[in-house]
Amino acid sequence: MNQIKYQKRWDLESLFMGGSDSASFLLHIKQLENKISEWEVMIFPTLKTVDDAYEIAEILGFIGEVRAELSQASSFITCLLAQNTTDQQAQLLRGQISTLQARYDVVIQQIQNNLVKIKPDLWTKLLETEELKGFKYILTKWREHSEAQLSSEAQKLYSALSLDGYHGWGQLYQSFISTIKVKVKLGESEKEFSVGQAINLRSHHDEAVRKEAHFALEVKWDETKDHFAKILNHIAGFRLQVYQNRGLKNVLEEPLMKNRIKPETLDTMWSAVSKAKEPFISYLNQKAKIQGTPKMRSYNFWAPMSVVNKEIRFEEAVGDIIEQFSSFGPELEALTKRAVAENWIEAENRVNKSPIAFCASFPMSGESRIFMTFGGSMGNVLTLAHELGHAYHNHAMGSVNGLNKQYPMSIAETASTFCELIFLDAAIQKAQSDEEKLTLLDEKLKRSVMNFMNIHSRFIFEKRFYEEREQGIVSSERLNQLMKESINDGYCSSVDHSSIHSWIWTPHFYNTKEPFYNFPYTFGYLFALSIYAKWKEVGAEFEKDFINLLRDSGSMSTEDLVMKHLGEDITLTSFWEKGIQICLKDVEEFNMISNFINR
Image (cartoon, rainbow, N blue to C red; front, side, top):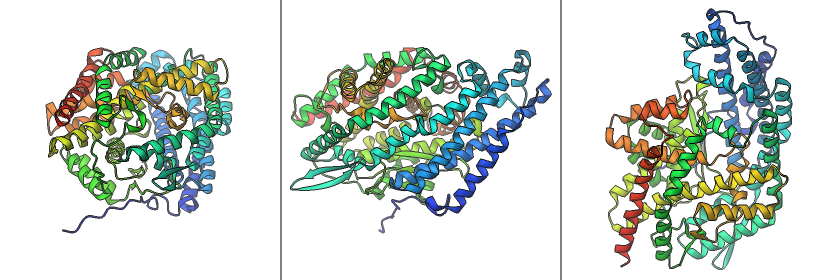
């Protein structure tokens, strides 16, 4: 039988032909600039009656259109720079897009300020009109948050300074870390790797290679830590200054608003997670015992359970993912087949690629692009399944108005995590031996530990870092110390040889668009587990309900979304415990099988 051959390189030409020298992309930028220029001089209409609702609807439609065009352009630049970090022309184009984004943000601020001036009684009536009821949530939030916004003049200054300052530091981080090369000894030879390739070695079957790669990276981070500390401090300093000018009392106010969740929801989630860590410590100890060490060593965490060095071919991974996704529903299966057939996936293992996997949305063409480095491990397969889940979410939002397409990060990891669960649980069910089942349970539990312990440690670190940054610059040595303490707290001191430089190679700390991009992962993970349990109850018809949930994710608060589609109150501990219980059963099964095999 002939084996199906899948491309490992994506197709960007169908989006804009010519790469960073694309004439069609330059035309797209020019047209976008003209629209924003026209918008900047537009006079906001004086609204007197509910009959004027259509004028607001026209403005909102225009906002959605421009947002989609900006997203299309930004995603294209992100893809160009990810596939080739040395693309200087793409760097220049990113600067142009950043400028247009800043101008767009200023206009949005002005529109919000004008909407706030509408009298409350008229405002209430306007939101109930046929033209505006679909935008009720986002318009209400604009009005509620207006007091925490900068003035129009301050917003213009912020946008201008953020290009070369705030966002500039974030872009410098991406460029800097993408150019770093790491030399790792492999037996008698030494080979040079990109950061992404070196990190992939943590799942190598040979402990000597994992250990060598871990410490080679640590040496490299120690050499560059002062540069990264400067970048992180400047990003945080800029953010804190803006918060102060907006009257925000603490650094969690903005991320909570962005994620559309209440403070009590976040507190309840972390409280439930903290109470459930003991079983995961037992899993880490059990795995360490199997590996012949008294305690889990961080460079062994991603190690495969099997001693057999089985490299998974890309074709095999894609075929298995399609097969498992088909068990959920026809739309997920069709979307995955389309992604493969139309070459949406960049998976080639080569140098000069970014180390960060992602899925980019292209709303104007109704497509996505998936970026990763496929090295043949089960972790790589799950990354591919994860990013295809993001593409599925983008697909679900296809018919939604541009203004309601922007869903919070608390929901952004839901479809991706759900797709990982589909693949893993199906593979576990099909396992033909205890050894194979143990390996797959291990892969699943790694993700539980990442969300219960690693993400928690990131949250703890970022919170403590910002508290200290308010008092002044935080040195690289102090950042190392904060990271070490946070990891010990997040993991309950259950891991040795942790990377005290995690604050360097965790890109989320340098994200200038999404502060505290850590807790949304744990939220999305536990939320996905609850949805997964719901699917098992409902059966084959559940895909329609899931798509409806994803479709609503940009137009509701997170609490209301979960209540509408799952009938659950996420401010209660009981909601979080349902997802946690699924994870605890995995621990019990892992420990039972491993004890049986190794007795």
